[in-house]
Length: 228
Image (cartoon, rainbow, N blue to C red; front, side, top):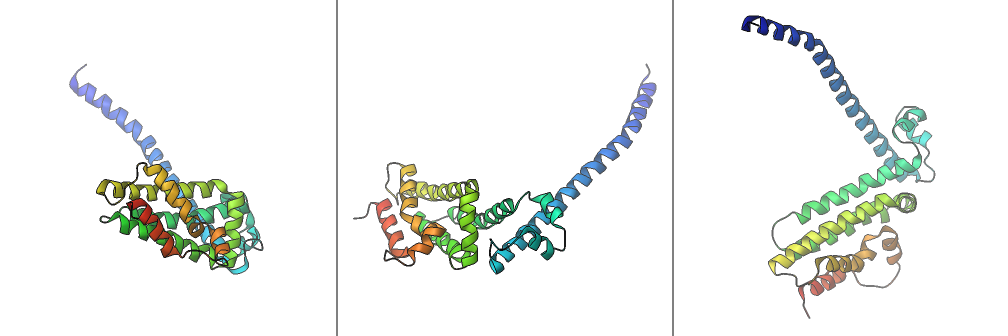
């Protein structure tokens, strides 16, 4: 077969493929657009649900209330979340994600591990306090989330523990901390801070005598650094 005939045949094959290529590209584009719209709708539902949880409480808020505030039908809400429980899990995941992002940013900073650990522990406490303890209606929501959506809470705890471990490990590497096992040191640090991290324990601890946040952080740092 001559090169001219071969090129002509290849051109005809390419022309036959082009309509399909265009259709496939269009389908991929429409899929991307649909995914983007779905993500935006899901986010609007979660933002609205969080606002209603804060205003009227988790138990009193219904899926119909959320749908009405969004000017959509309850059936449309159920397209994105199969139950109020899953909406609660999404709101909890969203709030916890903000704490995780702040923790990751602190752990990734350069400089003193001691200062970073103090900042990280303080930030987690303050953010949890602002979100769940000072607002009684959101406290109700997180209590339900911990009962019904424990997997979400476990993933969050694992993430925060991981960032604490990162900072402790860097402190060991720099000579600021002196611990034989970073994993055990992380577990001990988290156990010491649980009253200042756990939303339900934080609310209860406010009515009982005990060390302040700064006193507990100083205690943790002293233990990690080997101070007497």
